[in-house]
Length: 426
Image 1 (tube, helix red, strand yellow):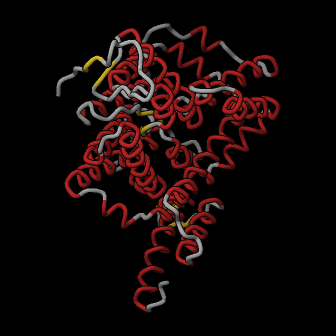
Image 2 (cartoon, rainbow, N blue to C red):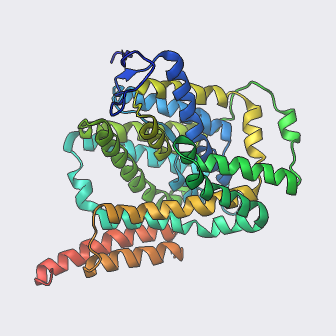
Image 3 (cartoon, helix red, strand yellow):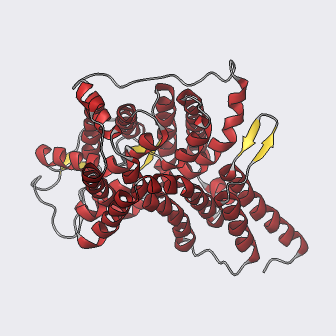
C-alpha cells in the first residue's frame, strides 16, 4: 500500500458539486488544517467516555490516535475514518467497576469485545455480511442500539442533579448550537456545549485545578494491563454485559462503510470485513493498554459531508494530532476537571441520541410495526433494557443490556420460525 495521494485540482479549492476522494488530497497546509478539524470534531465525544467511566483521558486519546492510523493501514488507505471512544462501552464498564472494582476488570471485557469483533471481521471478509443481516435484521439491530442508549438514562440523571443549573445551561447550548449555527460549527454542538458548560461551572461551582498545575507538560499516558481471568475466574461473569457491544460495533462499522460509499460514489462494501477487523484490533490493543474501546465516528462523517473532503490524508494527520495531545499529562488533567453538571447536561442529549439512532435504523429500513413479530421484538427488548432487568446464573450476571439483546434476537427468530411453521405469517 503506497501512502501517496493525488493532488485534487489546484490543491486549494473544491469546485461546486465536486468532492476530494479518499485517494486525493488538498495542499498539505489545508490537509493539516482539516486533520486538526477532525480532532476537534471527535474530541467532545471521545473524552466523555473516559471521564464517565474513570479511564485516563490521555490514554484513551493515545489509543484513539493509534487506532485511527491502524484502521487506515488495514483498510489499505481506502476508508476515511476516525476511531473514537464508543459510548456502547459505558454501561458494561460501569457494571464491571461497580462496588469499587478496578479498571483492569473492565479492560478484560474490552479486550474480549475487540478479539470477537476482529474475528467477525475476518469472517465477513470471507463470507460477506449476509449472515449478519439474517441474525440481526433491522428490527433487532435497532432495538439493541436503542436499549443501550436508554439503559444509561439513570446515569445521565445522577450527573444532572449534581449541578442542575450548569447541566441545564450545557444542555441548552448543545441543543441551540445545532440550529443557531450552520455548517461545521453546528456539527460540533457537543464540544461547544461542553465549553459553555465549563465556563458556567467556573462561575457557579468551585473547580479544583491543583492537579492541572502539578501535571507535567510532556509525558507518557498511564497504561495498565487487563485483569487475568485465569487468576480471577469471576471475571468471566462480566462478559454477558460486554458481548452485546460487539453487535453495536458491527452496526456502526457497517453503517460507516455504506455511508461513506454513498457519499463518495464508490462501492466500498468489500472493505467491510477489513473495517471490522481493524476496529476489533484497535479495541483489543486499547484494552491491553488501559484505553477504552473504539468505533467509527459520526461526527467526522459530518465534517466530511460539510467540507466535501474525504481524503484519508486528513485522517493520518488527525491520528497524529491525537497522539501528540495524549503526550501532555496537563491536557489530561484539564479534561479531568470537567464537573458532573457539565457531563449531566451533555449525556442527557448523547445517551438519548444513542437510543434515537436505534429508532433511525427502524425508519431507514422501513421496519413494519404493524407486524406482531416486529412489535414484540422491539417492545420486549426495550422494556428489559430500560428497566435494567438482571439475572444471575452462578457467578455470571446478565444485566439489562445483555438480557435485552438476547430477548431481541430470541423473540424475533422464535416468532418468525413458529409463524412460518404454522402458516400464520402475513
